Image (spheres, one colour):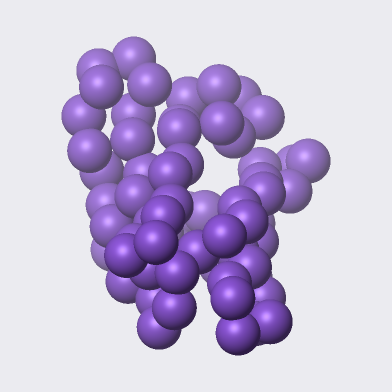
Length: 69
């Protein structure tokens, strides 16, 4: 969840990160990465999402950009 509790983020072995609106349950966005996503964290201010995968890569993505894709 983001700090506001408005969004739920999920990720998995297919390399896809998804963003969901908590109140409506609606799927807002999906973004594909090049490897399975094994770790996901949202910054305390809710501006960034950090993703880690099996090839030791960490991605930093703006939450706003992820939602608007």
